[in-house]
Amino acid sequence: MKFRVERDVLSDAVAWTARTLPTRPSVPVLAGILLDASEVDGRQRVRLSGFDYEVSAQVSVDVEIEEPGQTLVSGRLLAEITRNLPPQTVEISTDGPKVVVTCGSAKFTLNTMPVEDYPSLPEMPGVSGTIGSDVFAAAVGQVAVAAGRDDTLPMLTGIRVEIEGETITLASTDRYRLAVRELSWKPENPELSAVALVPAKTLHDTAKSLTSGAEVSIALSGGDSGEGMMGFEGGGRRTTTRLLDGEFPKYRALLPDTFNTVAEVSRSEFIEAVKRVSLVAERNTPLRLAFSQGALVLEAGTGEDAQAVETLEAELDGEDIQIAFNSGYLLDGLGAIGTDVARLHFTTSTKPAILTGKPAEEGGSPEYRYLIMPVRLSG
Image 1 (cartoon, helix red, strand yellow):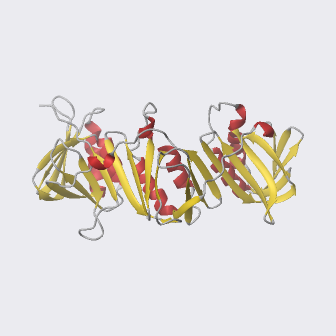
Image 2 (tube, one colour):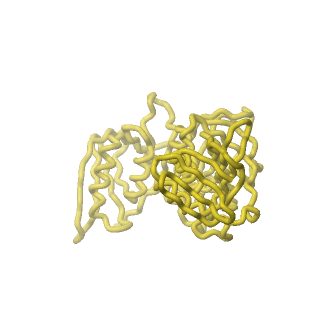
Image 3 (cartoon, one colour):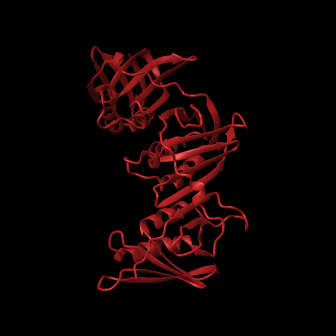
């Protein structure tokens, strides 16, 4: 095998493929990136592949091939090397059991791993539809903030993807908050109805990494049970991931229909005030919020501890309310809503609150909802 390619093109492709490689692979070959240089449809290309039996990553780039072939090398080492090469043409060639990487006056010789031991990557399922890559990445980012990180409850570490015709609903929860985002897409079959539970970290990383192309193709295999695989493709990059097992909570029942109080606050001012007032809050102590007509008072700290108070302007529709939240969870929601005005919906001080942006049209329903559980105050 021998091919030449520009440094930046190679570095981007290697870094993207290497990002999903396991740090402690179950077998050594899974730490490798498979390089396959060949001519495909009249174009000389090298395909880079990574796979850990859960997530696969594959990208193809145009190269100048002198000798086609395959080789398997340490993915993380190759990523470090290509990232630090001078900005010139890179030549990669095999020399017996070694791979030689040459760029300008720099030359690296790497050990290879047996290609025949490398597992076959899963086939991409049939494409189910397409969506704008930027919209998809933003939506996944909004929902991923509420996903659980406790691997003993795997079903809570995922994002539930519900497809009904032209609407995709994304949802995640760690039992203390819940994020839901609805968005439109272009399904291949307008009657499509499907559900999948995708690992949140994988979906978040994948969505962010596929914004180089205008659209992302989404492919889903398996039935409504959630068994199977999901695939994503865009900008010459392709990822598949196995789906999570387990029953996701029936989250729609948690979303209240009616509210006694609705408050509106400048999002940026709210975020800054929460950060400041929380400076005096001991770990896991709540941030107290008091909403009244025209004002929001934020307080943290009690008794002998350091204390902080700050007042913001707020519009209130309904009854005055005092409520307390975990400040980190509140900041996650405020950071995700994406509008200049934060709208908070309350029933009582002990029931979950809903945080949304202010819809562009009055009376419109928000695309994104962030439910947050209050913290009960003692005394």
